[in-house]
Image (cartoon, rainbow, N blue to C red):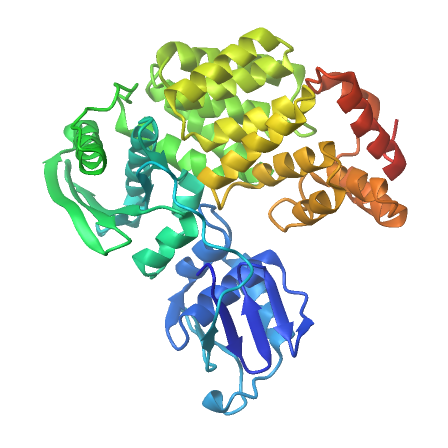
Length: 506
């Protein structure tokens, strides 16, 4: 919970600051470890399932259970034996075979940590929490997730609302938290919660709109329809929420909907894997390719397949020229099929910038923001392009807006933030950002090396440069400079200077 710290034995955990102290001395606990320990100490004595804990540390990601086992073992090693009287000096964390884990110590919730509550926007603000799958089939999780994501997208397109992005909403999957605490963390006033059950050709949806400030339910309804009506139901739910928040009943603009529900499910599953390991990205590629073959007119599948090609995971070593061409073709196809999709527009804009079709790229970014002023990814991508164009202040504003809409984002947001901080000469801040566990082991390490070099910390910079080259052995400054969409010579030279000082190859 934002603003809370937890004391147990000689330890104080501050989840917001990402720190664990032992008698005021820092303990080297990583990002995932902090998330896991926070989940456990936040509910002492309760059994937390493995699924709950994995969602806490890897929200929205599909990871092997062994990752959880390794992290728990590391936490136990760092905490050592418990001197807490509540468990007789045994262990802090107990294993519940085949179920999960439980924190055994006595926990005291302390006052606020380092973060201040986010101020409320000047328009109705809302977060859609993950709808709960209440069917007996765990395979229907993807359907419930897709419903949640579609509602977020539909609400997000309303310029009269402030809507939190998907990544941050899904950070609360499976968490038992007070609605006021969640609203404070996300800086919104309203929360939409609900459940979905899909079985035998029918779907039942329960939805509730809550005013987190008062705890009042502003609107609640149950829908029971044939599966063929699911998208009409989504439109109705969206219209009712907008009416409750703004006083106006208005149907959302029409969207390109799938004609094949299997293609829809495949696309939802693939989106979970996009920002993860190369192996999972290849798995996403197969799912999206299948979705396109099942439903050739489904724009969303083309959109994500374009991004999958661009990310360079289909072929190791980064996107090939062929991948870039295919990505651009797929993005254009997505926009043709659904010209009102801000998500398709910003991906096309981003790819066009890398093709140096700058006028067309700028126009597509402008259309994306007009279609959906709450699309956090648009602002994050636009920050990257603005920085390389030499519009440093504008780039910083864009990435700040992205983080406000998406407080718990994907790892590439931190790369964009660190890049913006480096470009602005805020090297200490860039180092702090780029050493966060979310982004540290990605390609953002090159900017970390450059930031350290500009601070005169050359030994550290060269270590980071060497680590970066382990995963990117073909990197050269010359090739990077030639392929990045720079429009400002001074900004380009600033980055080259940092790379050279860090010892990256020419």
